[in-house]
Image (cartoon, rainbow, N blue to C red; front, side):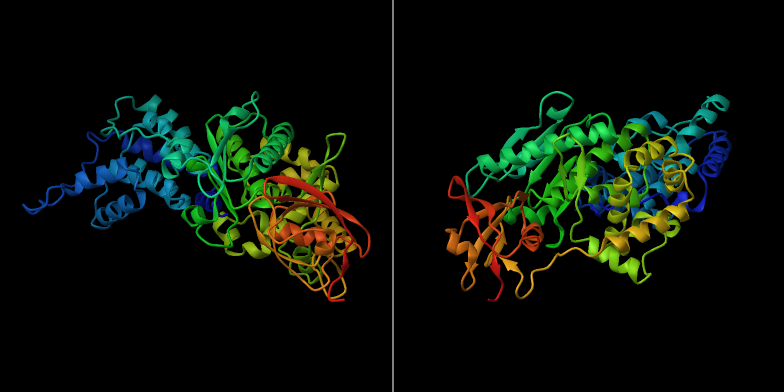
Length: 517
């Protein structure tokens, strides 16, 4: 998510990086003997009653970071035959910021072919950050060395304005200036100081206790993720926001999208403090590492690792245990019916192709990573992935090195494990254990909306409006997590339910009753 929608470079699918580098190098060296850069086409003379020329309008839109409108103007000029290298370069930047990564990479190569030579500006331009780890960008930088050595007199076009990623915290506060109250505004806080945690800024509408609980969870998760996979923390300030329902549609385009991390804006937005927050938080740290190392990991790795951390717990010894969640049964049914995508095909998918089949593929890649963890190969796989990223773009070799077996053999073992493990209980049916309540999401839990007849929760003393955030030791931060927690209950076996009533946090024992009885 896509948001977080990540696309692997189109060139990586068509050509090896070395071939791209060679092609780019040839283009650069040939173009270096041009006596002058390509000139921008003169815009038509505007009518006397129009004060702003097309060039001025484009410049204003770029400075205001209104990339969608700017790209439409630039596309019209390119459709009319304008191949000015700076126009092409600015278009590549706009496309990158709009998340159209394959188009941005193609346009970046076009601008180099057209004569763009300001590679220092290219390296310093934050607008190109989303494509900086692509094979195309790396190839251009490799070829840049060759042209600098062979053709030092190459002419560079006029420099483009420098840009930077907007301060995500300042932007959020500008958009939401109200002081925090229970019904509006946001509460702000920093991550754990030391080890880069201070670069994480939290903005939530949660009450003080729930906010603190979320912060502890993320601080603990960040420490684990840095130690296990990512090393260093983010170098830039990053905003992590639990968004109010009234503000959500500004950042999350569809109701079913629970969260999104947008790396170009350094902003994570989640509807609640549950699985979607954990998923996107892994993306946050993963992107920071990929940017730092200049790597772009395949989409199945990005989404598989993030999905894995939707449901986990830390053991007393500090190790992590991953639990099957609502995705597991979907993946298992695919394996049983032999409709699961074969790994060699799955690993080769572009980001766009993956997202087109996301409902089917997310469960599969999570189950793959859960299998890696069960086999105690997860961290070794990731280490091998980072070591072989330039020669193993789809991660197949990393799997084989971690397991010491051919990919097909590892896939067979995964399939067998999925079948033998059996389905998990992820539903609450007639005569199953139940608390006897209907609920709504509340950001940090579920709010009781009503009770069914002979409700176990009502008999125990819970009330309409109470917000449940833990059942039997399992965190409950949304309805999906509530359903899984209740599905694990046993009729008449008491379970502790933690909930918030007004500003107090309380605990009551509840004895589940059979649903419908």
